[in-house]
Image 1 (tube, rainbow, N blue to C red):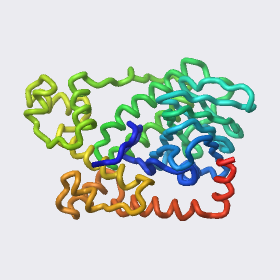
Image 2: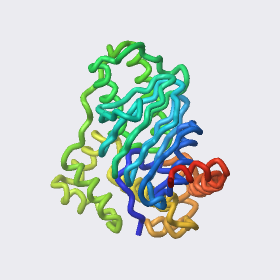
Image 3: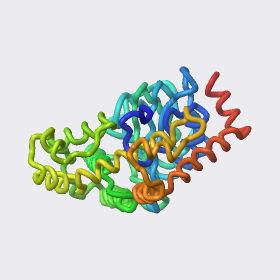
Length: 326
């Protein structure tokens, strides 16, 4: 059975799950491109959270999940960086004395060095545009602009739940940064559609796929569970998500394999075993599907984590971790 993992945004690009403080800190520094970040956790250092991230030419977007309270500090923004809370309680401070909730988002400008405080089971999206992609706004952003930016990010996160494959994911992520640059550069004078929502019948589909990993695909049974005909379910899913029921089912199986490959409590990941547990009997076909969906082979997912763990054992990171555990 797959390991437990939170309903993380960008879960198809999960990099670490059940990460220790050392692994988590090293991954955040690498994924956000900021070696000066520090993470302070008061509780259990063995499991502090999970991370997912995708990197395109227009910038980087990462999702940080904190399984317990933590403070993040020490990163100086070289350009506009957006902090978007999506779950739990997230606070920011500029002077280490006054804290306020981050809602609906925080824009860090060049030279800013705020501290972030993530509450237990909180989740935050970090958007770091590439240099020149997003112009730095002058002065305080009006509430209308902040609301439009949040709309833009929320719509992207909705679509991220239905990435068709890696190519589709990268195209939508590139479009997000392009739209963000146009929005900020145009003072918010841009039409942003209402936040997307899923039909309640399709929510039942997601619940079946998420909560019942042992379930074997049966379109007739799935349609009956949702209260529609097979034909209507097929077209409803295509219209609202761009995916067929089976394609989404297959994608969830691949994601569950990825969850296990990046589980930091497992010393030796077993790709073939995890694939077989999810019904992939042909390892070559599984590897091809995995690369199509995530842009890398399963062995590369494992190697990324191994390289990270090796880097985390450097003297600099050992010193950082000693600070975390004080």
